[in-house]
Amino acid sequence: MSKIELDKERYDAATQELKNYFECERDESIGELQSKLILDFILEKIGPGIYNQAVIDMQKFVSEKADDMYEFMR
Image (cartoon, rainbow, N blue to C red; front, side, top):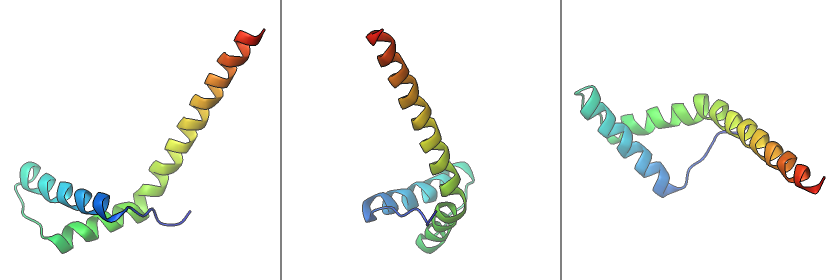
């Protein structure tokens, strides 16, 4: 799977969330570049696994709903 890409608005919001997290939870200030590097790492290394699990979960959900639909047809 290729790298997960976010549109500019979501990317900027995510970098701001990282900056806020470090400030509030770790009492550290990180700059714009640092937050972008962390986000890029997450999107490249961790994101695909999260995405794949979400797809698996959605497939299971849709399959269960389809099974429910077929039960009504019997």
